[in-house]
Length: 397
Ligand SMILES: NC(=O)c1ccc[n+]([C@@H]2O[C@H](COP(=O)([O-])OP(=O)(O)OC[C@H]3O[C@@H](n4cnc5c(N)ncnc54)[C@H](OP(=O)(O)O)[C@@H]3O)[C@@H](O)[C@H]2O)c1
Image (cartoon, rainbow, N blue to C red):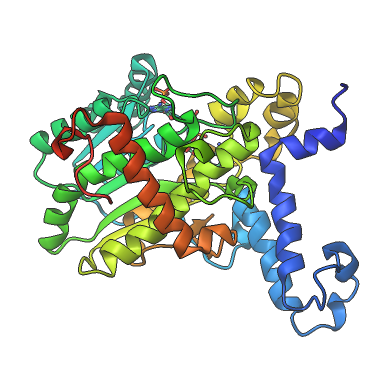
């Protein structure tokens, strides 16, 4: 079947920025009926008291997703220069050697962080990243990074890496759950779990849970400890019938956008769950938020996109390139969440706009079911015999 421009549009998640703009307009209170389309309603804006809010919403959507001067339009401003001094602090950044993750690593070092553990797959990419840091910020800064190979789909390996980190440092102030499998085709891991969920959600839950005792200790000494999950506005592509009720449901083939979008929805729900179960339940200094980085020029948006869309990928990789943010602009909301915010359980869009997210992302019951299923699947797939201590996860969060 020929790929029409309409199909292109539906296949490219970043163009969902435009879709999300339309959704926001449609859901706005000025529209009397759900059947009124955003564009029809534009004509009524001039006479409407709600027009400033609509304009604000439009400006935020542009600022959140695109590069260049677009971020300046947002209602909530933040820049990498606003990152506070991080002397003495320690961070873990998954995927910290490339793309947005590298933007985070570089910024943390620029603000004098003491140590960063970078968790990723490829040795070569890390060597390149370290070389770039040494050149730009000096050898001392490059030596503050420690790379640990970590495949987030290897859940036992994730636990081992977390254990090594715990034996190497006595504090952890920042955890950035950034690495991810992008918009790619459906795959099952060899242990039978949807690979998007296995990497983007389960792997990060195992990492976070194993590092949690160290983060609690750090928080209890009077420090604010911040965890940031890299989500996406593509979470809106999760199917509306998502229930997180069973492994069979997780292992449905939803297509590249649905598969990716659901794993990003999980990142937001996890942050909201954590805020309820940890921050508000006696750990006020332990925060978790989720972010959308915008539409960012990285390997994921320039190369990986060809895997599911050999033809359509050109539009994303090249056609839309002038509108993309660079990796440093893409790091801004994460830096806000990881070094600055005092809030927990928010979904933060560029530069630092707290957004509601989709209806599903606001559903506490769905978050509870997601985390219950997370626990069950990890137990089922990793427990040898019947002893809980054989699992790579101790506490649920
Ligand atoms: N780019 C965008 O427009 C955009 C938009 C919304 C959200 N995001 C999110 O932003 C995050 C960073 O993406 P990016 O755009 O910066 O992509 P990227 O440049 O391709 O970086 C992805 C990173 O994830 C690591 N990674 C991939 N699979 C892994 C695994 N199984 N275990 C451990 N590490 C793994 C990669 O490690 P290696 O380099 O070693 O392979 C790499 O460091 C992702 O969570 C993505 O979903 C991106």
